[in-house]
Image (tube, rainbow, N blue to C red; front, side, top):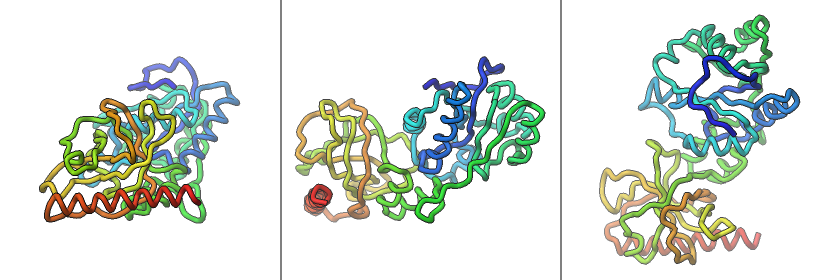
Length: 313
């Protein structure tokens, strides 16, 4: 998959295109990408995605913007897995926000990407003041040589699948439901870095996974598996803490710490993926490190029980 950090002034090849933020790449977006790639293969053209960085809502109202489900790197990996050939990461700034819908069509869709066929969600809006819609795209396509297809929202077991629905499930602690909407366990990926080694002092060493997100869609204590551990062909079970560690102080930055069960190797520097399977409890503040240690022991036991039940069906 080729990733472009800007839109070319003139396209060198036509594209079968979709546009969106693709946060989480949930089941609804997967269905859209499946149709996109099938159309592209039939036309012998690249299946292309145009996405925005930052998310437009982060640009217009950063304090009200929702927590991201995926980092840019995670999103690109998911798009590649879905069979996408080209991804155009368009920097969303004041200049782009000021483009009229008509100018967006001409400069980006026609000149920059030579769009042959465009697939969009049924609620897609674009251009200054969100002035562009499906009808405008259809009208423009009829004169500028591209066709437009609207992808209806996917219902999964009677529920509308969306990034917001996934976010709501994670915030409510219903990790299993979030996984059903995503079609896979919710995941946070990052590099294992040096921590303060407090877990080791308490008898439960942890892998500290780097977080680069300003907001997180979930917090608490979880049963997880960790993929990408060097020398391990299978995901490794563990207990994870994601949050601000209130027992250690106030105003601390969120951290992701994973205690891997029956594991004693150093994995500093490895890029791993933490797959969230089940929420054990919310974060809590304890009066002493001894009390925290006792609770961690209970959490590890609960994690072992969770995986034992999974194994036994």
